[in-house]
Image (cartoon, rainbow, N blue to C red; front, side, top):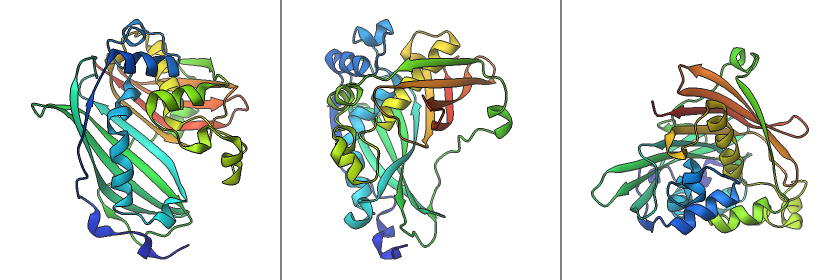
Length: 284
């Protein structure tokens, strides 16, 4: 592994620049179409799907990461986990301000993790959502762990070994990555160009992890018998393997508590688990 000098611990806890974003019906409709979300509130552009929460904060994440991590180390980055805490849904017409703060650098047996917390607020300061974005840097040593770990959402092996409440499969379109890149702003080349993806050891272009998360979130709502995308209070996953466009994704859903808390995981057509430790909490 490389040296600890790849990281600037003094930048942990420092808030990055703010970004203003106005939620439009057009943007909501585009995101819903990119993730094949047919819930009327989303398809009509009124209420955003839960993972749309990444769109207002997207441009704040890279500066927060660069404030701690060297460019050399960032060439080895993959998205490790995402945890969305949604105090209220994003709706058309909202004007919000978002920022990101790197909160923890964590040692891992195979590299290092950087946890970044984002906040999105209304102009009056009311909190709309918080997110924890965890990046993983392969074969890079953090030396030690610093800062506060993100909230835990791991599923027990006993739960995963039990019979699921539901098992739902959705197609992953050949053009899913192009549509998602346009709707989300994430145009990282490994999602759009086979040669670029193969150059970093992937079998070809892969589906955005957050797109996979959105597809799994849809499955959880369907399993719960809920149509309103604004019903989601929390959605969290760990990304465990890439999903390829042109296949299917199958989400297995378990009930954790009452009628509002669920665990889930997602698998590709070969049975490889692409999302682990999924947790969804719905509003009562």
